[in-house]
Image 1 (tube, rainbow, N blue to C red):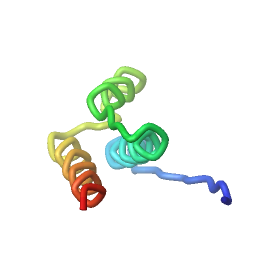
Image 2 (cartoon, one colour):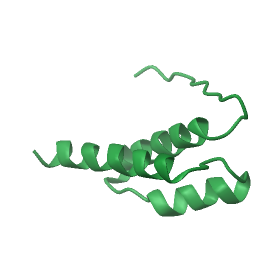
Image 3 (cartoon, helix red, strand yellow):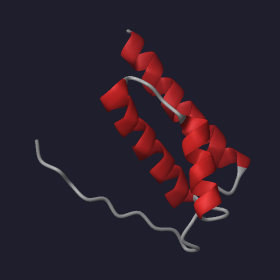
Image 4 (cartoon, rainbow, N blue to C red):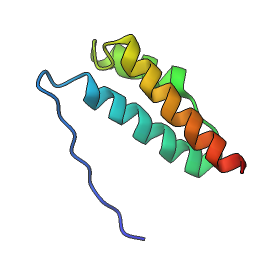
Length: 75
């Protein structure tokens, strides 16, 4: 399997990039362990850099995407 690098950025260096990082990390965790840890990872991101996830809509987006992935894995 080929490893790839990802680059993500926003105008303020946060926001959507933080949402992408939270999704990517949780999807990798799910592949390795079969589990998600959205809350703890989001908390770590925001503690490392305030406003990395900076709106309720971004939290909702992350949760909805991870929910859809989980639903897809059950069928």
